[in-house]
Image (cartoon, rainbow, N blue to C red; front, side, top):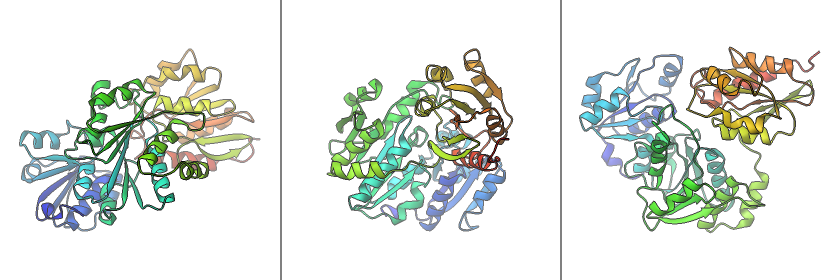
Length: 422
């Protein structure tokens, strides 16, 4: 790893005890830092995560943020879920204590070749496929970031010749400083995360940070079919490469092929990887058929655009389960795809009233108190040949720890259904 001496005996406070916070704290302890962790939540999730800290020498604070601990820190490392207006961040900014993201921490230490992928949708698939293409060509890749494995949990294993493929959210980009990927990929932009960003311009500005430190030796891969993304070419100091879907490649595959071309990886390798790729868990994942009804887990779909894609790619009538924590999504955009395809929408979570208000009058709406209840009600109303689709259009944090837990709960509820409706 690079720059390890910088962290030795340095007082570092990690803010947020989700996966990336745990990984960052453990790594910093290994580097010899004087580490503390603070999280304003004291619940079953944070207490379980606290058990993943490798030593009780990592000072832990749950349920509050002690100002003295913040004032004594020389550096704050913030998890993606910690907004810029969180008290520890505001105090640190006022005192001019440096605040960086977990991604920036990983970057400071990483000796490998970094490829970073961002966008409103498709990040996980593209990030995964780039890793598979590199592996298929004989290279070694580490796929991490917002995809599930924190960057800081992998960085100690990375060698200079290895590739690191990072899925990067706008939240993770807000607090980068020197982060500079060799290849940055921007897939698309749609209305998202307006529960955290003030407006679309602020959201875009956060996304653009992915290439802000690049120079003429780096590459920026942009979607030529998204006018906003295409227009970013004029702001780049790096070499710009465009991608677009074709008769043979969907947009995600086209982005992967563009990156592969920059790495000297041939079309044949990409074609083989695409043909063998069976999809991702929680992304249009077939769970089970029961009573002639098929169940699809699309828990990763936190955008209306993802829901539209799912509806269009299901060959029969759909009962849609949607809802969760609202992200400022315009739910009415699904209507053109849903009117002739969706028999009913069962809404759950904090956003259920907003979704109900947006879609009532055009679609039949029903409310459910829990996701398992929604699954049971959908099965009750579905006819043989119908599909039940979980495609929430919302984040999971009102009811679940993440989209993966939401997907697992959905699958468990589906598996518990009787095989015969009669």
